[in-house]
Amino acid sequence: MTLRERLVASVTDIRDRGQRLTQLNRELLASELKEKGRRFGAAIGLFIGAGVLALYALGFALATIAVALALVLPLWLSLLIVTAVLFLIVTIMVLVGRSKAQQAKEPAPKTALAEGRKTADLMKANVRETAAGVRAKVVPRRAPGGAPAASPAPPPMPEPPSQGDEPPEPPSEAEARGS
Image 1 (cartoon, rainbow, N blue to C red):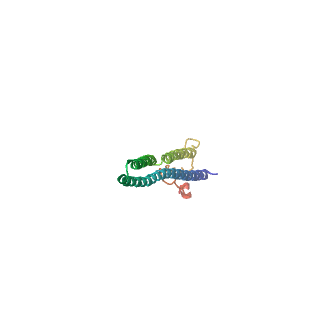
Image 2 (cartoon, one colour):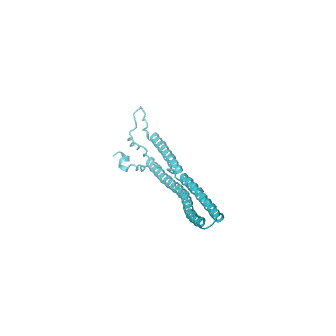
Image 3 (tube, one colour):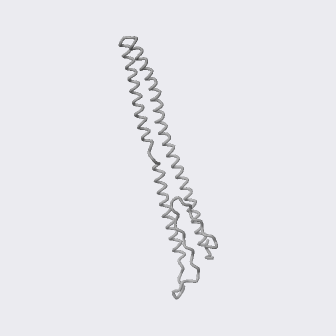
């Protein structure tokens, strides 16, 4: 296997690994967003429950007013107590729902972003190491007498891609031959 074939195989392997890492990061992001959706779902469920109980509390409050006008204190007082308990439950549900919603609204999925940054940093370091190793093997050897050997100089290695760019294409055969 020639140096060029090994270089092309290395670049292809790096590209494939980068694509796989990107796919894994997308899956991590999707799972984090699903978890956030579950949290919002619980908060919404509590708000809906609080709304339903608020309607019942309103019904009991209206019944309390009607009974207060028509009857004496004991029935009225019992209905008022029921109404107060329902409003207390509604208040508790709203407060719990609000705290759940605040917990669920983190601005960004932290784990996926951290993993993406870590992956990008590792890929940059690996590309630099690979490029340095290839440069070390391609350095022209000196002929006896101190003059460089007659072999043509290899083309310069491209810089590692910046974050979000596609990996560079391997040089064409014409570029590799120095034509």
